[in-house]
Picture 1: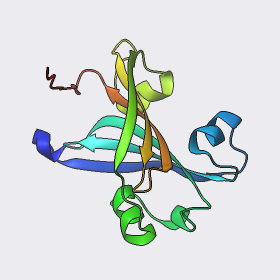
Picture 2: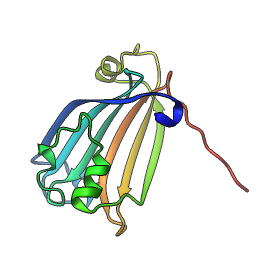
Picture 3: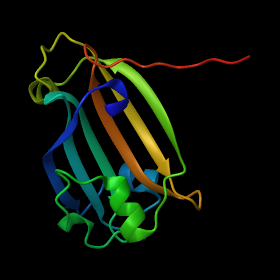
Picture 4: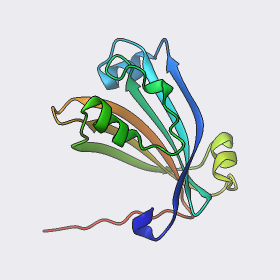
Length: 149
């Protein structure tokens, strides 16, 4: 957000240990144990911009659930305390209509489309450590790409 000239912010929506993750969640993370789920409302100039939900295997990150996350960076915590460096991520992006909960959190009308990002994040050992789902407001967010030949 800073690169876009906006003041970034964050509001914690939910954090919890998922005791019995779905088979799909566990398979994506190649985890057989409990997962830590972190859901935050991301702000730009104090206005809602996105909802980010991260899932991480709790066996790799003990005590992560005890952090605040309102004013802390997840990736900085992972790097400083768990020696995890994000080296790459794979994303799928789709445009869809928001759910009623997303409309409420993002403070948008249900007729405004959103970008839905599904991300799988890898560490320095090429191991998946996070699966994330992000929903960005279509009226305030844009995607810019470069194409080379």
